[in-house]
Length: 278
Ligand code: APR
Image (cartoon, rainbow, N blue to C red; front, top):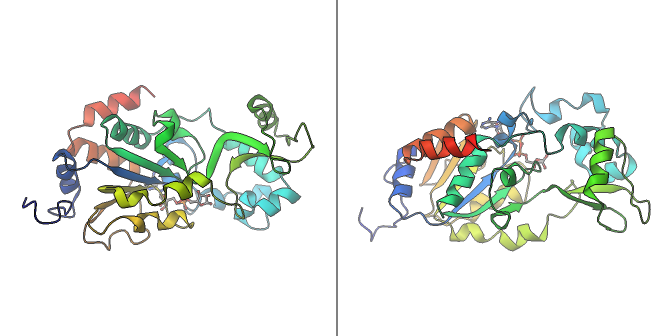
């Protein structure tokens, strides 16, 4: 490849060309952007898939509209639907998917610059992706606090409430306690804004398992340089992915897509054994 040409241009918009790019040693800084689609094979529904998505299955909670379950004003009026759902979604009973292990493998290979995730299931961490490489753009169940006085709330106490489907209240001011998940109407964590320019430093961008519906996360793939190849591993085309000169679409199941890419990179056995250990 003539190095005077932009070194990050793929020789073709194919999975094999992405693998060549990685094997060439030119890829040193990968940014990964993920959504609920990488956790569906772990048994956690995504949000918007017709029939199977969470928002299509919340009738039992009698919500005014599906997203109300994650709306801060609605939560303040009626926290019950959220805590009913939290009982089903709380981390600890789900195993990371091979897509999570693929992200861990990128870090083990020393080429993961940053993982931006919208997921609140903490499965990236459970797969062994180091904390300092993860930006949980929509927060997670990892911490909880009072929405009135901001006092941190003990993990053991919230686990008991979630198991019992009861509503935890602050030990200090009796305010409502909420896991530090970003609800509609709340600000994203400072860590997101501090890292949102990082895609500019990437030499490969991988977007997986997201509809790219919710801003400002959905704009992250636009932050990459024009010469940075962007790979979409997703059941459907989303956002502007596919329109860039170096965009590669691997449409279909995330687990199949990462297996194919890992195999093309010569990492099949490493990935499978990594996942087997989660
Ligand atoms: N393999 C590949 N793609 C999948 C799979 C799978 N196994 N399962 C689902 N998908 C795709 C869907 O086709 C869809 O494009 O993943 C995407 C999931 O989109 P959403 O359900 O909208 O989830 P997400 O993008 O994470 O939602 C973003 O919306 O409600 C908010 O805060 C919530 O973080 C969430 C945000």
